[in-house]
Image 1: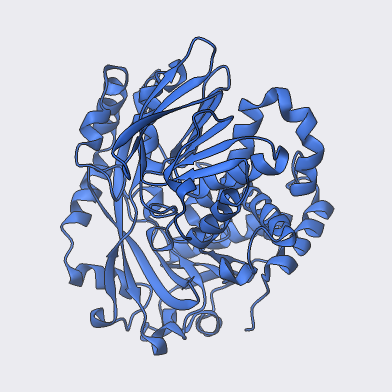
Image 2: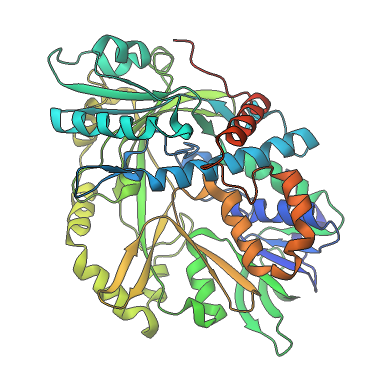
Length: 503
């Protein structure tokens, strides 16, 4: 994407200001333009390019989270049953994303699907009899719902070897194992997807992208609109933009900006940053023997985002393997952030929740300390639980993006640590901010639809017919309407090139 004068200037007045150049702002910008092409939309990105932080393909797992393989979305309850309600919610959200992308591919907004999405089977893999029993029960529960009707289950080492040979190479033959597989899983390059969406926004006369611009302050004006002060780092000058609506989708930087907005709904929120590292293999003879995203069970005390997985990745046409994550700690809220991010985010309004979370999450603190003290030999031992014959010299350690987990006040506990994403919106709908992390990118369309519903209620009836054209499942329950689900699933998979397994 080449830089133009439009990318180094901002509008003085806009209808919509989108802060952050990642998948969330890009999705909302395209949605709003599709609903009302006359809207003046200004995107403000602090870095020189868009999709550099969490939307960058090397900064996330690119799983296309559909709850097909992620065991942390299916909890074993006290009565011994498996609760799949979260898995159903996430799966439906990802299908909504696929419907939107299908529409955009058909309109020529997005390029050929293989440039941003690839079919990659999603597997869950466990060892030990207790985990085997859990996965079997999970499979039986999920298989009964039409979202997961294609799921396969096996405890046969030979079948697992057919599905994912690396898992079985060098493994003890009498070890209790179990695996599930869904052949229509995906690998998504959210960086490529974001860049294509932003390019579409940039090509429109009523929209503008400003990179290397930092938002310094947000101030509510008497007429209900917002004055946004931005620093133009190209020219070392400050400019202001006024707009009736602001979306803060700046990843880890969203919390400080939400605090600057001073909206009552943002009081009491804090953030806990967690960094991640992955082992990456690009040795062709190893990479070609694995075609799956394989998720296991998280270690005791580990946050849900730290579920170990051995993934096929396809980034810019090149295939590689990724294993991790290994958690770390940095006070930065962004990979390109400041060491002062965490301490400067502590305010009187969120001090109590943050102290309460520190008190109640000793296991997480212990886990992070252990992860930070890991040696290369420790990491390869974790990898060998998935790939027993792994050799460290064939894997490179990379640092992924920062994730800022939500801390919010709680009446009884004082504060809780939240995993996932949350939209915080001003009561008058003039500002919305997105906090949190995974499964974020995969559910971006559903999350941005929530922003539209909460912040543009006066426009919703007018926009609904167009929304139904763009996203046929909008306003309907795919979880309850199996026939509609199958119809839209087939259409999306055909359009996006998502095919079944060869084996």
